[in-house]
Image (cartoon, one colour):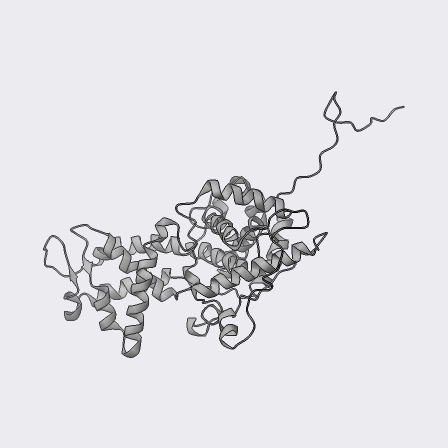
Length: 370
């Protein structure tokens, strides 16, 4: 089993805020260049994977700057291209639909899987669109492909026709052939980096460690009840905090946060936020910074406290729809405008040509005469 410290997730898929913005800008400009220079889009469509290891390449002095600042703002047909911010709005919207397709809350009962499959699909989908653009690749197709791939990665396979049925239940039908084509493109766009680590295990591990630690002499000083009750912590006392933290991680997994922080840091910060937000007399308040002080050693101690404190403030803003979290505060009117703009600047959702009609009826196709 691969350790997180030696994984591609840590070494190739962790970014700064600035690097994420640069990746999206570069993907947008590469799509503009391709669409502006293509009378007829090639088949199969091109995909890119420059986001893999982007931060390391940048540190090593490799050229990671945007492609061309002078690229046209409109297509050959004069239609405006999407801006990077508009693309991210669409990506955030679509990634938030993954739990309805795959996972514990899937509409199709045959696609109900553990939450880790949902989280893996979301992460693969977001990885792809760091290097690629919705102006070239239909996000609806890539979403289903990511779900299909996630069932394989997490060893909970499904049949592709169940995914097609699932998309129909969501009123966003994607046929099996499109799913399989998109799966190949997805693999290339993420550089075949399939292994994903999620904060759910970290939330559980820290909760279990807290249950043990808070029973000791040092731990007892870090927990208190708002009703003044003085008693040892028992197993069920931490259940509300654990459940709230898992719910918060559900929001994290459809956002940019997994590109910015490690699963352990996210899990610990989620517990910290949940601990602060739960105000019930029978639920203990825990000094989690004190817990870090006692459980981490050396230089790691200060680093972890700093990272988790900053992350806690970020997690509290997810309910406002920030950091790409499409679970909350979605501007549907703006989304509708962006989606119409997308259809005009590329072929997604392109309608088939209608037969010509005459004034007397819908079909002017000549009938055979004997």
